[in-house]
Length: 194
Image (cartoon, rainbow, N blue to C red):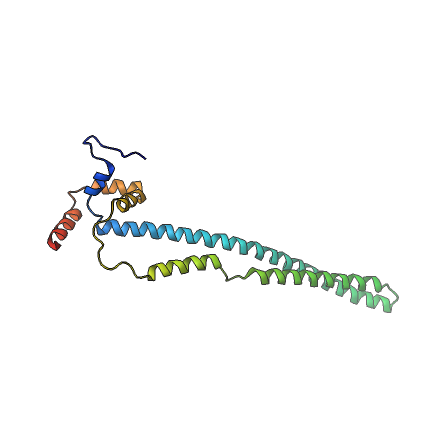
C-alpha cells in the first residue's frame, strides 16, 4: 500500500509519529474489544462441540425410544401370553404368541444396547477444544508481562489499535476531541510526571 498524504504533505507514518499515546480509556477499550472477540471465539468453539454431542444424544434417544416401544409391546404380548396360556389350558395356540414375545424382547434388548453404546461415546462433559483454548488464554494471562513502561507505542501498534476500533468508537473519540476534560486531565497528569 502506498503511503497516503494529506493536504499538508504529511504521510501516514509522520501523522502516527506525531499522534499522542493512547490514554487509559483507549487502552481499556482495546482490552474490552479483544476480550469480546476472544469470548465470541470460545463460544463458537463450544457451540460446535455441543452440536456434535447433540447429534450423539439424539441417536441415543432414538435407541432408547425404540427400546421403550418394544418393551411396551413386549408387555402387551406378555399380557396376550397370559391370555394364550389360559386359552391353551382351555385348548388355544401358545407357541405363536411365545415366539412373538421372544422376538420383541430381543429387539428391545438390541435397541437398548445400541442406545447405551451411543450414549457412552457422547462424553457429555468433555469439550477438549474449548478446554485447550481456555487453557492457552489462562497461560497467556498468567505469563509475566514486560517489566515497566516500554515507552511510547510504535507507529505499527498505534495503527493496529486504530484499525481495531469500531466506527462508533471513532466517531465518539472525534466528538470528544482534544478539548475534552479527560484529555486535558491526561495532559496535566503527563506534564506533572515528566
